[in-house]
Length: 470
Image (cartoon, rainbow, N blue to C red):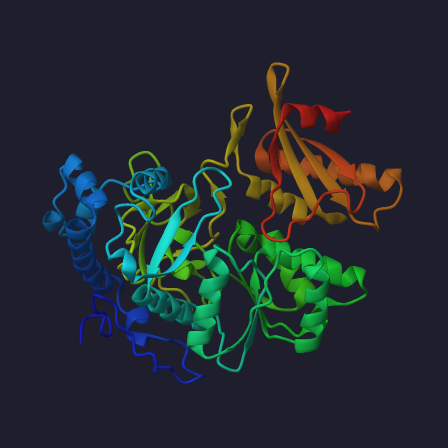
């Protein structure tokens, strides 16, 4: 027995194991052990993973030799901070040079049994080559986190997201199957599917919903347009990933009121699946960093050294159970703040009290103030009279940066006076939160396009800005 309940390399799981339904922990020792003891085990695992990658992956061997890093010299988490980070751009470059999986693949290509990846909408898609062993490790990891959220074998999990290259749906599917619950892989993205989702949710009454926050809001809006109260679905838990909304208080509160269910946030990066390595527990104090699955460091975005607990930084991830394409210090460019455990559920992992609330590369600067779209989302969603959608338009108008928000008002906001009051309130709250002024334009219900997956609200376009102002 190792420090962490048969924490073997390569990972091996007892596929027949399941805790009793009233047991709060899937892996009691691993989840509640003293943090210092866990960190000592993580250091040893990091050494194993680095040696494994150095011997099998030219990408890592080349990168570390250029940086003067010897895996054998890594004897502490502080030593590990000297290992150079990996960027998504590097992964795309090496896959282009070494088709199709890149020279960071650590197993023979014949052992890759699942291919997933990014959409490639912003450049060359990244291919994820996943072996059978890794697929099972992902399933077991997601089962653990779903269990911590309170999902049990007698639940039915409605999966309302794309079944495609996107890992979110598949991770939830295999984690739910491993946990022993019923899976309802409904999907998303087909024209007319949202209306059918309302019908199926009423008919089947699943107990758990998985998807993105924006799609759950879209379903609720469609249900109410059809005269259906979303509470009729009987959902008791809403599990989200893919965008920051589930940790934004106004959006979280709205979802819980609409569905009469508890919200749980999760999600890091598809490249580091199990992406539920950041996932809430029954404590609901923020996403836990499940460090024995994927070691997470919240780092200074300039030096990539860990910041102290209580500070803000960007997550850097190292997979500890992946054999096919291990990620070792993968830079996320997301933004978060972390705190040390334990949490009220008894787990001793660090946690992110506000979840992942932005991306460094999504941040924009208006008149010297750094602004994250999630801050605007929070203000808009909390407004009385908010109609469920908004757009953020940015440009440099004349000599100064300018920010305009198109705010769709609710149908109950009738008359020019009520719309003007809503506009003024929105501008006042945005100035208080952002530190700079923003122009707000109220538009009628249904004006702004809804998305079947992730909300895309920021537009940086001079011509659209001028058209909106006119």
